[in-house]
Length: 347
Image (cartoon, rainbow, N blue to C red; front, side):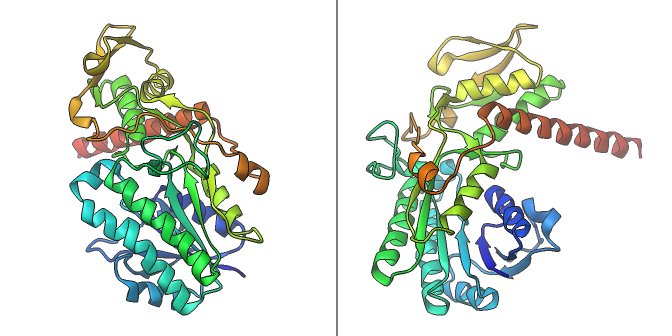
C-alpha cells in the first residue's frame, strides 16, 4: 500500500486530493497546525480515514517528524498562504510559508526518505505581468504580488533540489481552479455566495474589484488528478495545468447570477461600473476600488499541451459546470443556514 503525505490537506485541493488517493488505496497522512479548536475543514467527512500529524511549514523539525511517522512514498505540498490580497498585508509570513516552507519540506524529505516523490503546488500568479500569451512551462516569470514572488522561490527551489540531489521533485503550475469547497475570501466564491443571497432577498448587492481581470478557470477536482499523474511518471518534470480559455471576472459574475436566477445588465465602465438586475432595475454588483490590487494581474491563460500529451490529462468539468456546481452548493448551504436560524428563533 502506497503512503502519501499531504500538506494543506484541509483546504480545497487537499480535500479533493485526499479523496482521490483514498479511492486509489493509499494510506493518507495529512499535516495540521495545532490550534485551540480542532478544525478539519474540507476533510471533516474523511477524518476517520486520514492519519493527521501536527506540524508547521515553518518548523523543519516538525516536518522531519512527519516524514518519519508517515514514511511517505509521495509528498504533496499544498500548504500555503494562498490569498493574494493578504500577501500585501503579511508579506513576511507569506514568504516564510510559501517560499522557505518549501525548502523546509524538501530538506525533511532529503533527510528522512530522499527517494520519496515530491509535488510542489506552483501557480499561474508567478507569470503576473505576462510575457507571452498563452503561458507555457517556458514562459518567463514576472510575479506581481508578494504571494507570486514567494511561489517563484518555491518553484525554483524544487527544481534546484531535483537537479542538485537527483530527487523526484516536480511542480504543477496550476492556473485558477475553483470549486464548491473554495473559501469565501476568494472572489469566485464571494460571487456565488452573494448571487444566491441576493436572489433570496438576504443581501442587497456585492462589491467587487477589477471586473476586467481575465483568468483561466478550471475545477479543483480535475486539477488534483493532474498532481497525482505527475508523480506517476518515470521522470520528474514541471507542467502547466490550465484550460487554454480565459474569461473576465465580469463573465464569471454574470454566469453565477444567471444560475441563481438573476440576469444582469452592465452599466458604466471601470470604477463606475454596476451590474443591474434586469427584472427590477436594482444594483446587484458594484465596483469598489478598495478591492483592486496594488499591482494588477490583467490576463492569465495557460497552454496545457505538455500535460495533455505526456500525462494524458484532460479536464472533465467545464467552466459552466463548475460555476453551476458552486451556485447549487451555495443554495444548499444558504437554505440550510436559513432553516437553522428559523429553528433557533422558534426556540
